[in-house]
Image 1: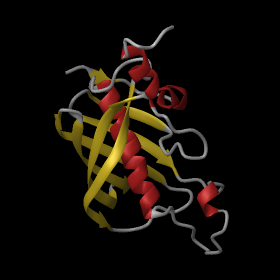
Image 2 (image 1 turned 45 degrees about the vertical axis):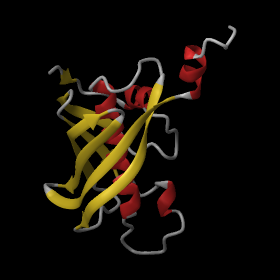
Image 3 (image 1 turned 30 degrees about the vertical axis):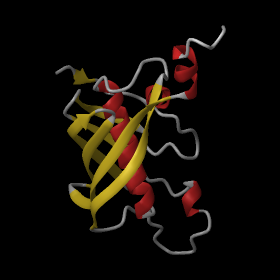
Length: 163
């Protein structure tokens, strides 16, 4: 399988439908197509989700850490050839299972997101995700994602559509 190259935020944005403030992957360190990907999220104190938290030690919400793992999984799906090129398809998070929360991810820490492809069949993708800080487990989860054509791709494939 081909290697997934290190990727900056501009390349990440090309492969995710999300935009600020909901892009939760800062860059991709690398991986192997069809196997695994490692991405990074820097948890900054000026994140929008910290705006109304009055705590002394702000922690990234666990639900957003799971979403960051899903976004890393979407990047893995793209590099694994499971998506159509040119934004012809996208991934949707369909299910979250067997999730374990071990600790928080605090402002100033770097969250490492590891996703491993378990199975892909007929547009349904099963992933295993782990988020950690300095090799300390933060979240471990299993994700199910579905790959669907975007509206533009469906219109292009429809013979009734006139261009």
